[in-house]
Image (cartoon, rainbow, N blue to C red; front, side, top):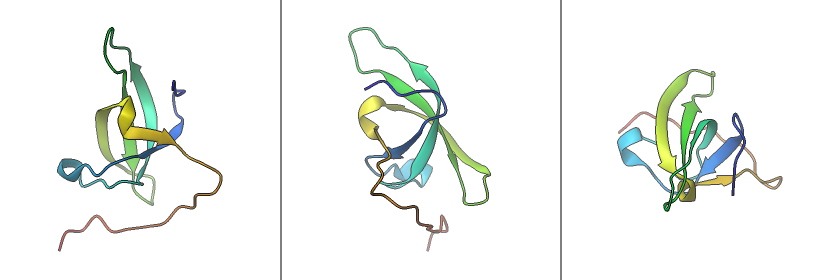
Length: 80
């Protein structure tokens, strides 16, 4: 599936090195075409106040579109 720039998407798995979890919402900021392989996307993740907390590049299989039957929730990034 091709996503549009600045579209919001959902992570499909935990990314512990970035302190991100499956279900976290991210914004697409770039698309990376890869011949003979899976395309990738650069994502920006924001906290509840709108501050950037992560910028990362992932394979397309690690994201999916938001759907109308989903709602936002808040979780703490604090460890421990």
